[in-house]
Amino acid sequence: MKKILIVDDEPEFADMIRMRLEANGYEVVTANDGTEGLAKVREENPDLILLDVMMPNLDGFEVLKRLRRSQATVDTRVVMLTARGETKSIFRGQELGADDYLIKPCDARELLAVCKKYCRLR
Amino acid sequence: MGIMSASIVTGYFLMARYRHGLEHMIEERTAELREINDRLHLEVEERRRAERLKDDFVSTVSHELRTPLAITREGVSLLIDGITGPVNVKQMKILNTAKGNVDRLTRIINDLLDISKIEAGRMQVTREKISMDRLIEHTHASLAPLAAQKGLRLEVQATDRNIEIFADEDRIIQVLNNLISNAIKFTAEGRVTVSLGIAEGHMECRVEDTGAGISEEDMPKLFQRFVQIGRTNGAGRRGTGLGLVIAKNIVELHGGRIWAESELHRGTRFTFVLPLFSEEQVLLGRIADKIVEARQMDNEFSLFLWELRYDTDPALGEAEHEAVGRAIQHLLQARTYLRSTDALELRGDRQMVLLAEVATESAPAVLKRWKQIIEESLRDVASAIDIGVACGVANYPYDGAESHELLQAAENNMA
Image (cartoon, rainbow over all chains, first blue to last red; front, side, top):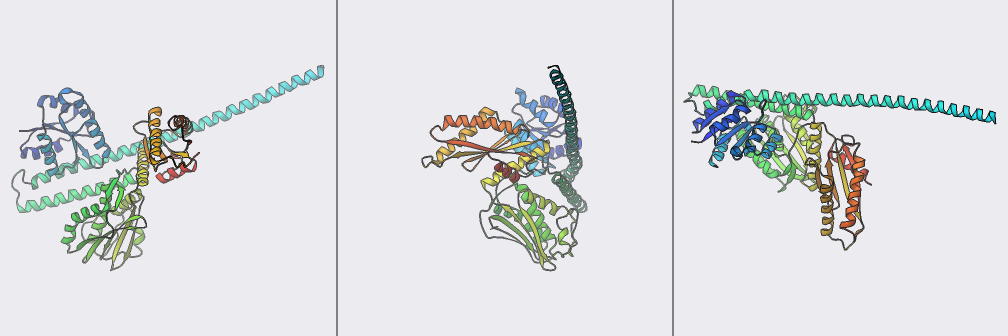
């Protein structure tokens, strides 16, 4: 079973996504902020990370930078969660090494398609 | 002798007094100027700070509004999709109503945020070469069901094919969606026709309906914010009254125009025109993007327009022209350490545009230095040919606020 880590500062949002993914056969863990997210990556070794961009303290880009700096997580699949119209975030994410992005609110089909794609490539 | 020396001494003394007085006056004036300058700088800083706060406010509000919507939408979606268990017919009806209204709220928020960006001059567009035919097909496919629901025909007529523009695809789709869905909304029976063609070197797109029409007194209010024109068949979903304003701004941002013609009880026709794709459009687009970026970061930048000047030597072929142009580009990049935020574009085969974050005061000095470097290197690269280089510079925001203004200003002061 593939494991997905959701890092988002809105626990209710993470919860909704978790329910959707679990119903589709994924194992899901969540983290409420960047620091917890980085810790969970090490503990859980997920197949894919869904990473929110806008978080207080350590934002999504910072987390991404640190992941890419470490040998252990340089190849981990990361999909950024951004808000509509933030084209700059999308470019920045790509530059920093994100694999893809999703725009909130996420269309269920798109979310599942993206997860399937990146969990398969391992 | 004594009298003369006395008068000379007096003369010197008077001159010294006079000079001292002048120096004192100059000091005072300089101090005044410095004070005025400082005050101006402070005002500019204040204004920039206020703009930054406004931006932060907008993006915070945007996030705060969108997050609960995203969560609610997900939750309702999960219920509708049966993820949490079976749902009865009545529950499904309520859930679908909820979902529809969450989408409606999302549209309203998106409109409001677009308007605030537009009014701040900060709406960004990501331009690329796009096929207008394809865009219209796409919108036709997504809106035909809506038309069918009302028993209306949605037709597409293209008088020319392969019409390309340099534009932001999502934004143009937004304009088309707005015009077509409005037409459908305000038409009780008949059809909505979307036609595409080329007129006077521009792309021309029309959305025509057989609806209720707009009265003469309502026409001027059409593109105003928050105004809902009370067409007689106004039933159905109310909008924000912002769609047309946003559409107009998007069209104008792309260098186009939009207008409407209508006859009560006969129908309405909206037309918008956009420049066709060309290299010049790409250049103007790049400059426009730089302007939006500069507005957001409260920066200035300079536009340098370089032109190769040489006698039309029949022996000098296209390849040589290109080679010289590339040599200049290479020179500028290597010797002047262009930053990644600077942009260099060729314009035709003799001109080059450089957009660099050089402040207005520094521009003339920078220009002079670059001109020297280029002329020196031209002597090395193309010693057999007599080539010189001319340059004009324009600064944003002082010499212009739009792409074509800056280009024209640079052309005007080329030397």
